[in-house]
Length: 148
Ligand code: FEA
Image (cartoon, rainbow, N blue to C red):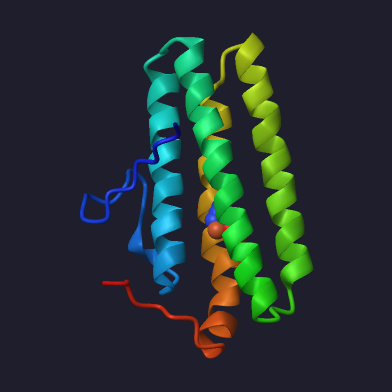
Protein backbone atom coordinates (compact mmCIF):
# COMPACT_ATOMS: atom_id res chain seq x y z
CA UNK A 1 0.00 0.00 0.00
CA UNK A 2 1.28 3.44 -0.88
CA UNK A 3 1.51 5.71 2.16
CA UNK A 4 2.02 9.41 1.59
CA UNK A 5 3.93 11.45 4.09
CA UNK A 6 1.68 14.43 4.58
CA UNK A 7 1.13 15.39 8.20
CA UNK A 8 -1.39 18.24 8.35
CA UNK A 9 -0.05 19.59 11.62
CA UNK A 10 3.56 18.64 11.07
CA UNK A 11 6.50 20.79 10.10
CA UNK A 12 6.60 22.21 6.58
CA UNK A 13 8.54 19.95 4.23
CA UNK A 14 12.21 20.66 3.38
CA UNK A 15 12.57 23.37 0.79
CA UNK A 16 8.96 24.54 1.12
CA UNK A 17 8.31 28.26 1.30
CA UNK A 18 4.95 29.88 2.00
CA UNK A 19 5.57 32.04 -1.06
CA UNK A 20 4.32 28.99 -2.96
CA UNK A 21 0.92 28.96 -1.22
CA UNK A 22 -1.97 29.31 -3.64
CA UNK A 23 -4.64 29.91 -0.99
CA UNK A 24 -6.55 26.84 -2.22
CA UNK A 25 -6.26 24.54 0.76
CA UNK A 26 -6.44 21.15 -0.97
CA UNK A 27 -3.89 22.18 -3.60
CA UNK A 28 -1.53 23.63 -0.99
CA UNK A 29 -1.66 20.37 0.96
CA UNK A 30 -0.90 18.36 -2.16
CA UNK A 31 2.01 20.63 -3.11
CA UNK A 32 3.52 20.11 0.33
CA UNK A 33 3.21 16.34 -0.07
CA UNK A 34 5.14 16.65 -3.35
CA UNK A 35 7.92 18.54 -1.55
CA UNK A 36 7.96 15.94 1.19
CA UNK A 37 8.38 13.08 -1.29
CA UNK A 38 11.08 14.97 -3.24
CA UNK A 39 12.93 15.63 0.03
CA UNK A 40 12.86 11.90 0.78
CA UNK A 41 14.15 11.17 -2.72
CA UNK A 42 16.97 13.72 -2.30
CA UNK A 43 17.89 12.16 1.01
CA UNK A 44 18.02 8.67 -0.50
CA UNK A 45 20.24 9.93 -3.35
CA UNK A 46 22.65 11.98 -1.22
CA UNK A 47 22.95 9.21 1.40
CA UNK A 48 23.69 6.78 -1.48
CA UNK A 49 21.00 4.43 -0.29
CA UNK A 50 20.32 1.20 -2.20
CA UNK A 51 18.99 1.64 -5.73
CA UNK A 52 15.68 0.16 -4.58
CA UNK A 53 15.16 2.94 -1.98
CA UNK A 54 15.78 5.58 -4.65
CA UNK A 55 13.53 3.75 -7.11
CA UNK A 56 10.77 3.44 -4.51
CA UNK A 57 10.92 7.19 -3.79
CA UNK A 58 10.59 7.82 -7.54
CA UNK A 59 7.62 5.42 -7.76
CA UNK A 60 6.01 7.24 -4.85
CA UNK A 61 6.68 10.62 -6.44
CA UNK A 62 5.26 9.50 -9.81
CA UNK A 63 2.13 8.14 -8.14
CA UNK A 64 1.45 11.30 -6.22
CA UNK A 65 2.31 13.56 -9.16
CA UNK A 66 -0.26 11.68 -11.20
CA UNK A 67 -2.94 12.11 -8.50
CA UNK A 68 -2.10 15.79 -8.10
CA UNK A 69 -2.13 16.55 -11.84
CA UNK A 70 -5.48 14.76 -12.19
CA UNK A 71 -7.02 16.84 -9.38
CA UNK A 72 -5.63 20.14 -10.67
CA UNK A 73 -6.65 19.46 -14.26
CA UNK A 74 -10.16 18.46 -13.14
CA UNK A 75 -10.55 21.71 -11.17
CA UNK A 76 -9.31 23.82 -14.07
CA UNK A 77 -11.59 21.97 -16.53
CA UNK A 78 -14.59 22.19 -14.22
CA UNK A 79 -14.19 25.93 -13.91
CA UNK A 80 -13.34 26.69 -17.54
CA UNK A 81 -9.77 27.87 -16.98
CA UNK A 82 -8.69 29.36 -20.34
CA UNK A 83 -5.03 28.17 -20.18
CA UNK A 84 -5.94 24.56 -19.43
CA UNK A 85 -4.28 23.09 -22.55
CA UNK A 86 -0.89 24.69 -21.99
CA UNK A 87 -1.01 23.75 -18.31
CA UNK A 88 -1.74 20.12 -19.21
CA UNK A 89 1.14 20.21 -21.71
CA UNK A 90 3.53 21.37 -18.97
CA UNK A 91 2.32 18.53 -16.72
CA UNK A 92 2.84 15.99 -19.51
CA UNK A 93 6.46 17.07 -20.11
CA UNK A 94 7.26 16.77 -16.41
CA UNK A 95 5.51 13.39 -16.10
CA UNK A 96 7.55 12.10 -19.08
CA UNK A 97 10.84 13.38 -17.58
CA UNK A 98 9.97 11.76 -14.27
CA UNK A 99 9.10 8.44 -15.95
CA UNK A 100 12.49 8.53 -17.70
CA UNK A 101 14.37 9.13 -14.44
CA UNK A 102 12.37 6.33 -12.79
CA UNK A 103 13.38 3.93 -15.58
CA UNK A 104 16.98 5.17 -15.39
CA UNK A 105 17.05 4.41 -11.63
CA UNK A 106 16.70 0.69 -12.36
CA UNK A 107 19.96 0.59 -14.33
CA UNK A 108 22.09 3.46 -13.06
CA UNK A 109 22.49 5.82 -10.14
CA UNK A 110 20.22 8.84 -9.97
CA UNK A 111 22.35 11.98 -9.73
CA UNK A 112 21.82 14.96 -7.45
CA UNK A 113 21.50 17.02 -10.65
CA UNK A 114 18.40 14.99 -11.51
CA UNK A 115 16.78 15.51 -8.11
CA UNK A 116 17.67 19.22 -8.23
CA UNK A 117 16.06 19.45 -11.65
CA UNK A 118 12.85 17.87 -10.27
CA UNK A 119 12.79 20.23 -7.28
CA UNK A 120 13.51 23.31 -9.42
CA UNK A 121 10.71 22.35 -11.78
CA UNK A 122 8.27 22.07 -8.84
CA UNK A 123 9.28 25.49 -7.50
CA UNK A 124 8.98 27.25 -10.82
CA UNK A 125 5.81 25.43 -11.92
CA UNK A 126 3.98 26.08 -8.65
CA UNK A 127 5.31 29.63 -8.36
CA UNK A 128 4.36 30.69 -11.87
CA UNK A 129 2.13 28.26 -13.78
CA UNK A 130 -0.03 27.07 -10.87
CA UNK A 131 -0.29 30.53 -9.38
CA UNK A 132 -1.65 31.76 -12.70
CA UNK A 133 -4.91 29.77 -12.26
CA UNK A 134 -5.51 30.97 -8.71
CA UNK A 135 -7.48 34.16 -9.46
CA UNK A 136 -9.68 32.24 -11.90
CA UNK A 137 -10.44 29.37 -9.50
CA UNK A 138 -10.98 31.66 -6.53
CA UNK A 139 -13.32 33.81 -8.59
CA UNK A 140 -15.20 30.62 -9.45
CA UNK A 141 -15.76 30.23 -5.68
CA UNK A 142 -13.67 27.15 -5.02
CA UNK A 143 -13.87 26.38 -1.31
CA UNK A 144 -10.51 27.46 0.07
CA UNK A 145 -10.78 26.67 3.75
CA UNK A 146 -9.87 23.41 5.47
CA UNK A 147 -12.70 20.96 6.08
CA UNK A 148 -13.34 20.43 9.75
FE1 FEA B 1 0.23 22.27 -12.13
FE2 FEA B 1 0.73 21.71 -8.97
O1 FEA B 1 0.80 21.28 -10.79
N1 FEA B 1 2.34 21.32 -8.63
N2 FEA B 1 3.07 20.59 -9.14
N3 FEA B 1 3.76 19.90 -9.58
